[in-house]
Image (tube, rainbow, N blue to C red; front, side, top):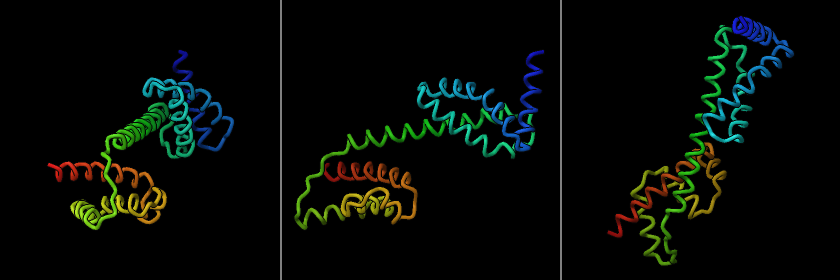
Length: 180
């Protein structure tokens, strides 16, 4: 009987929250926040990450609660939001680890001022995808920051970071092939 009462109460809280009742929304969030946190903690294995993901999830839930057409589906709907935020966090963490690892693996390229060296760098860049070569050129040869490159390229800074990661990987392969 308790389960049925709890479901009915949650449905009522959802309906009242959708109508703009702030107290109902506060109660709804209080009823679910710890559940979301425990779910995120189980998925991410980090209390700090789980706390951040829970907060992001609550913001998303509050922004899109009015779009929920069936109050009965609130639990499934809200946990899907939490799951997506967990996946986003995991992807971001993986990308950051790969980026750090790639920087550690990048071979040292001797810098000389000779025209011959500049020509070989230009030849390597010409063998690459133009977007990747442009990112390398702006970052290493023009010494622009990631944010400045993002503004120049009219793309988000995250895109610049990922392109820089792949450009380094490509350059490393090209350097290895030239030295064989």
